[in-house]
Structures are given as structure tokens and as C-alpha cells.
Amino acid sequence: MGTLLEMRQITKRFDRVLALDEVSLEAREGEILAVVGENGAGKSTLMKILSGVYAHGDYQGQIFYKDEECRFKSIKDSEKRGIVIIHQELALIPYLSISENIFLGNEQAKGGVINWHLTYQKTAGLLEKVGLRENPHTLVSNIGVGKQQLVEIAKALSKRVEVLVLDEPTAALNDIESENLLNLLLELKKEGITSILISHKLGEVLKVSDQITVIRDGKTVESFPNVDVDENRIIRGMVGRDILDRFPPRDTTPGDILFEVRDWTVHHPEIADKKVIDGVNLSVKRGEVVGIAGLMGAGRTELAMSLFGGAYGSKITGTILKGGKPLHLKSVSQAIENGIAYLTEDRKQYGLILDETICRNISLANLNAVSVRLTVDEFKEKRVAEDYRGRVDIRARDVLQHVKNLSGGNQQKVVLSKWLFADPDVLILDEPTRGIDVGAKYEIYQIINELARQGKCVIVISSELPEVIGLSDRIYIMNEGRMVGELARDQATQESIMEHIMES
Image (cartoon, rainbow, N blue to C red):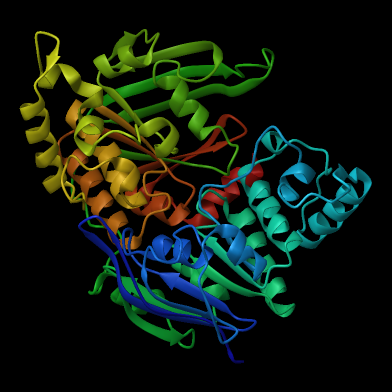
């Protein structure tokens, strides 16, 4: 098939930072092009140029679509040509219905009056096409993230999309939802729709892509067909070296039990008689990494947040013990004071102040350590931030850079640095590597191992079963708010974990 879209020698600067340096890529008609690279490589920036988020004139280089040069000034310009991008942060309005979201800005109206019958009729057809069995009247706030992704794709199809760009579409989805979405891309391919897929999940890239383009440090490294390619081949292009072992070895021997939870029960914050967590028991030893596995909706995040000073839930009962002594945690600040840290799965909403600097975000959980008489010592705060920037390899211009301008992986390192500076004894890490590349993941795995070597208790919640298995000394398995199994490291396989879930 012939070339449908070509980006030639695209260069983009943000102040002194060169984000893209003469990047080129080519997408063919009716194929799936995967664009891969480490966090900060420039993938999302490139797609924002393609979609008109960064207007022509803000970058150097050329975009050719159907052999015509395009100079998009806005998203509307690119969408008129059939190029639609679905960003990693979904752009749906939660308190509008599915129908209203799909046709927002593209209302089915005549004479200024919306034809609601036609709107719902077209919505039903689009939902059927993407395999989503939901009433068009349903509010987006009442459906999960996986279904919201399908609504975004339905919205793109309503605009007669010819090139569909998806930026990390499965980052927040479970395995079943991810599988369904990838199968949908293959179905759209049969209809002649070209897709550009940005993903850190290399197994997904290998499953669906026809061509793979690798970007590293703002430059195109190589492009090649997906023929006889394995993950190691892609990783070598992404990071410039082989990563022989995805999980760094850890030789620590866990000590005595330091953190224990007994008969922990949590009710829904709005539905008083609904138990979200039901009689959970768990323990973690000094120097031990304990994983919590389960399908989305199993209650893992709700458990973690409820333990973190009651940040989630109502009518919470049960006992938390640290060093054998009961803790009575009534707030997040009390949890922090008692040496417990929680790295949230949603770093942008709950983990960071996006409009603040790296420096200020790192000091947030331990301001006393950089303060004198209730006044922050900015020089000390900056020294601390510089130290952590080096320790966890935060790639930024300097520590005064705002975190909203960092890549996802570097934002995650800032959140992790915040909790490392707080020096907790117990760290609960909720999806610590979500949406970040294989190189950054390895660096975070090394940090987790170092925390274990220091005798910390580490609890890792992850939707990626290979990650839970590769990191953990023991694994608890959750389903529907209950612990349904416990496996030692040498017993844990993806199959054994799923067996516990399915048998519960």
C-alpha cells in the first residue's frame, strides 16, 4: 500500500530544550504504525504537531497527507482532513451522556436545533461498531476507563476518521479491556483506517503493528516492518543498549514483620451498606516487597487509600499495626507522621502539583526537613531536589522546571522522590510504572530493590502480572474486595494467580 501520511524533518523547541530534532515518519494506507521510545523521547510532541495542537509555524519541517502539504493551525484543521488523535488523558466530559460527548462540537442539528433522535440513533450504531453495550443516555461518569476509551474511538469514527492516532490507549486498562481495544484496531484496519499507536507495552506493539518507528532523544533512530521482531530488538533501539533482565536481581533476606493489617473492612463512601473491602488481612516484613494482584475493580487501590489515613471509604474497621503497636490513623498527615507513604496510581490528579516546580513537589511531604521556624529554606529545598534529581535520574532542564512540562516517566520519578525524601518505613506503590517506558521501569525497579535493602516494607500494586511476579517476594491476590490467595515467589505464575481469582 502507498504512503498516506509523511512527516519530514520535524524540529520543535521549548525555550532552550530541543524536543524534536529532524524527526521523520511515514504511515501507509490501511496499516498500523507503532511509534515507540522512552519517556521524553518526543512521541507525544510529534503527535501534537500532527494534530494541530502545536500549530504550523511553531515547529520546523513538513507534513504531507495524500501527497499534499498540510499546515494545520488547530485540531479542527487536522480533523477536517480525517486525522483524529486520542490523547492519554481522555477529553470526555463526565457529566454529559455518551451521545452528548460523541457529538460535542459536531452536533446533529438543523436550523440551530439538535435532532436528538438522530443523535441517539447514530450513537447506537457507533457503539455497536466499537463493541460497547451501553445506553447512549448513560453519563460518562458512570462507565469505567476502558469503556471511556471506546467512547473516544466512537467519537473519532463519528468524524469519518481516516488516520486514528492513539497515545497510550491501554495504559489504564486491564488485560481483557486492552485485548478488546487491540482487536478493534485490527477490525478498523480491515475497513481501511490507518492507525498510529504510541505504546510502552511492547507485546501490544508486536501483536497489531505493521511498521515500527523508534524515536530516541528527539530523533528518529530507525523504522522497520514488524517481521521476525521481538521485544529485545525494539528495546535495543529505544534505549541504545540491550536490557538482558527486565527485573534487577535482589538478594535481600526479609526480617521480622513490621507492618500488619487485621480484619480490615471498608464501606463505599456514598453507598453506606456496600462493602468495598471485606475482612482483609496482610503483613509485610522488613526488607520485603509484597505484591497485590487482581483484576481492575478488585479493590486494590481502595485498600491502599483506606490504609493511608482513611483517604478513601467510610465506616472503616480493623487494625493497623506497625512494629506490633496499633496505629490509629485519622488523616493522611497522621499516616505520613507514622512513616507510611502512598504513591497514587493517578500522579497528575493526586500525586503532583502540576503548576509547581520539581523542587517544590519533592519537598511537599516533608516540609519540616527544609524549614526553619515555619519558613521554607529555599536553598536547602533546592539542594534536596538536586540530590534526588541525580539519585533517580529525573531528566529535566533544572529543578525549577514545572512538572507539567515533564514526560510521564519523569513525573513519576518526582512523585517517588517526594516519598523517598519523607523517609517512610512503609511504602505503598500503586501502579508505580503505569504509562512509562521499559528503561524508566528498570530504574524504578532498582529503586524498589534499594528500599528493600534498607529494610523498608514495600507494597506494590500492579495490573501487569509479570511485574508483580518479577518484583515480589510474596503476592496477595484480591478479588471483589477480599484476599483470595497468597503465593510465595517460587509458586507465582500468571496462571496460578488467575486460578485464585477465577476460583473465588
